[in-house]
Image (cartoon, rainbow, N blue to C red):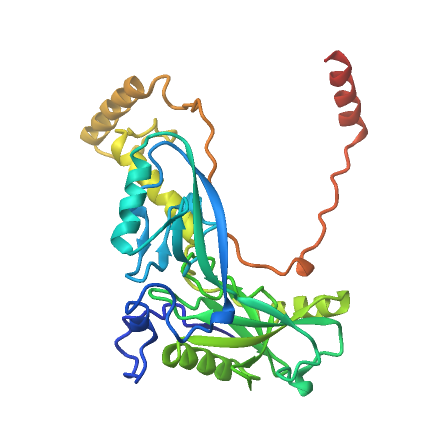
Length: 356
């Protein structure tokens, strides 16, 4: 049985009962990560991003008062990740939210291609542990070769859990994850991972896993999940079979973020470039009125004059658009066989190479 967990677990959820500790409010009290995140789970990353003239636009960034990142321009993800704490830009320490936007605006006004170097602090989401670790329940160990990980998820502002799970033979498996930038499960899990315990509490059903995950995130803001990941072929084959059990099509599934951004950009282009309808390839209906036929003919004539020679345009510059994907365990992927070229095509290719 598959079930979506915390698909829109927003901080502004009014139905949630009031708690003594509010993890979302803790992010706005001071700069950086709040105290409930252990220091040993934080690591520093420095990376350089190539930006075109006029980029990045300051309005495409969204950060909290503590300089925690919750939105970035599409071309900056990766290497940026949701929840990064931005500490430096080009070696200059970022003091507060206002200072961050001032630096970004200053860099974008240079109107030249440049490399911008960012330094961030990031929560470590996955740490591998041995089978003999005391936190690994011995009764839930697989007889096959599997790797075990302690994964950490933080309830960041405006984040969503974004995970679908199912239970088979008293084990809870990750069926899919939301590939949106604000999904906290995207970095923590691969498809096919088994959730053995949540905060050291074993979970054997979808109901238990859902309750433990959501309660821990809402009350403490942090959750540690013990994950079992298949390695050897027999374990991989079993997980593949599990993912196919009771597989049902989701009604009206959420559109991926990258598809939404491409559609919005295309809609903006069509609204601002005075796009006109193309010539209709279908014949006019004989049942339509004479006035309607006359109007359609005038529209087609005008469209032909305006779009003659403009139906296809080729840009002088190439553009690169990133696409999102679900995090899949590489062991679950299958090799695609090489395409075998038939003899006729092989001879034709050989002749073309000789002529060249």
